Length: 179
Image (cartoon, rainbow, N blue to C red):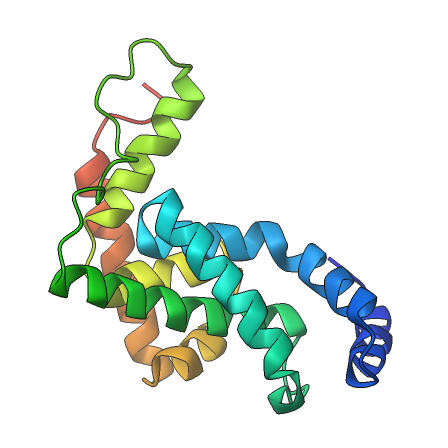
């Protein structure tokens, strides 16, 4: 993660229309944003689309970035909103590709990949609110406060959602991971 002082300098350069500074900010957050997108959408295709949309939205709307949070937190929020919209549209228009990234036969691939796919499947079984909260916390590293702002609820609701999401994941995964 870019040190805060360096991030502030990059933000000032972006405000002066420096595209290279924007690229540096995105590169720093890219892996975590990808994790958030994949965790919320549940498939690579939608995650890739959402990530590209989030980056483009951040660039086009950079003047709306107030600096009250880190750039990466702001980008997670944008990405999560885009992902949420993709997931809700997918429900309206079912896609035959939905769930294509879920495991079907894991005997030929490594245990770690299989475990990752099983976890991704389990996260996909959660309600939208639970999935988003746990992904933003565990993958995005957002605080309860930041998640509460993102989801438009109070902090206790976020804590409850994450607690219930973790409990549901434990039940869904049972002895499947690490065994």
